[in-house]
Amino acid sequence: MKSREWAIAVRLGVAASALAACTVAVAQGTAGSQPAPVAQPQSAAPVAPPHGPVPSKSETAMEAYGKLNRNNAGYLTWEDVRHLNGFETAFQQADQNRDGRLSPAEFNSAWSMYTGNNP
Image (tube, rainbow, N blue to C red; front, side):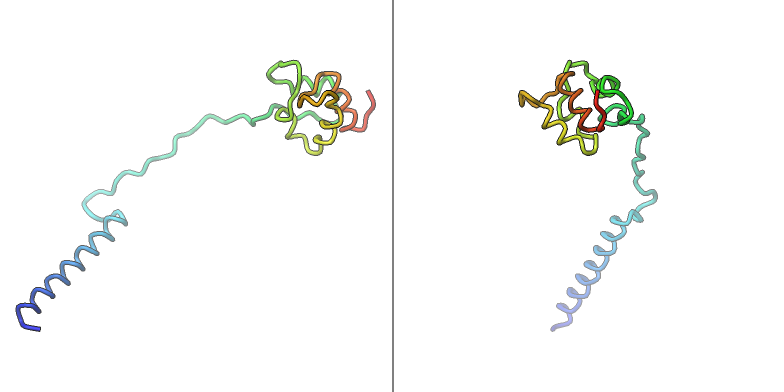
């Protein structure tokens, strides 16, 4: 390599090293005088669980139905009761017309199966 080519190669190497150092400094937030401010998470109001209060198996069917029927639709869907652990079989067996909904009478039957208590 000639001296002129060597000088250019050295300058390019220094420039590449300086560029790499600047890139690292920017990535680490140490370049310049002040690092960019970090956005703070905003405090959010507590979020209610997607389902309402969970009825206890010691409650009557009507008490449980009242807690689960949050939208007052006159029936319960699987979404309304899916958080009740082990309720799926009772739901399927009590849904006599297979519409995916439990009327109050169907829910009464399902609750009896679920809790083991006869109405």
